[in-house]
Length: 168
Image 1 (cartoon, rainbow, N blue to C red):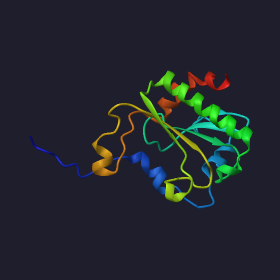
Image 2: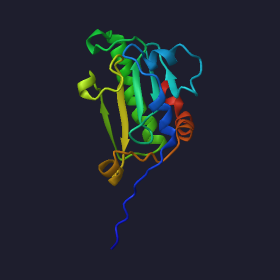
Image 3: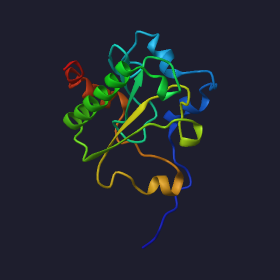
């Protein structure tokens, strides 16, 4: 068996993230909350105290985030009503994912602080990541590259068909 070594992997959609101006003071969640363009910003649901949105740079197709509207990096500063709403939205996000893309399992977590891997360390958020048997492949191991199997706009449209779950 011959092995072919790939020397270049093209991921042109990543250039937006790479060239994006980054600042320790900026918060993309707060920025998009000020806008009224939920589809463009991949917001699936706006609650009283929290939102559900697709991760623009996901680990895998369907990667959702639940975030408080309150800007804080300190989980202990979130009021109990917001905690409750975030927990409910996390559970409803699981339900939407189960109904729309039928994952076999989930990774759910919060990264607090830069050393924990938080890409956005200034605004607490919960990651809801759908998983399937064999969904990871050789790409992250060989090239530090993830393969996302579906375009974000297609995934967003699938989720909107089940958006009534958030109103339950």
